[in-house]
Length: 232
Image (cartoon, one colour):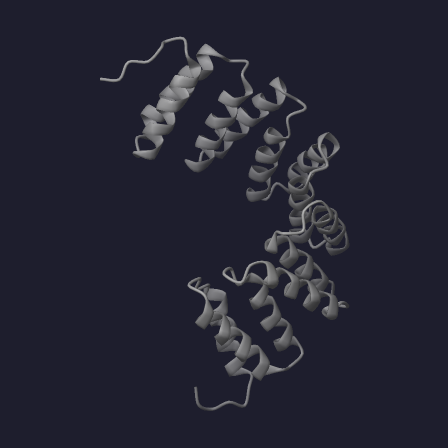
């Protein structure tokens, strides 16, 4: 039997995490709530419970906790990042945009700009997405995913395929184990009707990585369908 200090919220939070990892969510929730009961004005207790609810698929409960976190520490960017992320995933674009913009006014960080860039991209506001991705990369230029986002925004904009190629290549140079940028380069070759180059890129990607994304196979199949190659 484990005995913990009944007035130590950190201990209850630790117990909650242990129960979560052994797949006992009811006991995990009970201990998270006990931590909040002991220290209701500590933002971290609401943050950890909100994250727990999010992973349990209880989005409305998670939103409640992140809002409470923001109420307690309105200058803490964590609550805004988590709340905006849930709104984003739920397709509540206006709410997500409002929260991400607020995060930038508090702390114009790499993550805040990147989040807003992703939102603009999914709303097909490609010019705005490009602006946000550039601001994110100006603060930290080693995230291959953001380079891919910037390249995709230029690609979908429809007039900047050379810039898209340049930025896919930069992202690929940072991380070749996750082939998101390689897939982008293959897609560019398909758009340029250079089917053989597209196939070379896709097949090289499959040979050189353990990451087998279904989209690679679909793009290879599409390339063969639209080519004159008869024998695979």
